[in-house]
Image (cartoon, helix red, strand yellow):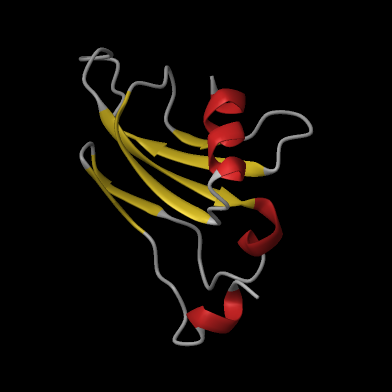
Length: 91
């Protein structure tokens, strides 16, 4: 599933993308072997596994330059802090 999304992100030349109404079977950090994006998901719970959530897809080359990784606040909200040098972060 993530490989299909990653292919579209590459096609549109996106470094960071927020995805809504996602339905991953797990929450947290997801990365497929050899992938160029890492997905940070929240929303899935054992009580309601069919509830949609939200996800950040972040290009692996910039993850190490972020001040912190995305943090889930609740099952419908996830935060991502970008440094004030965000325009140069992606160059």
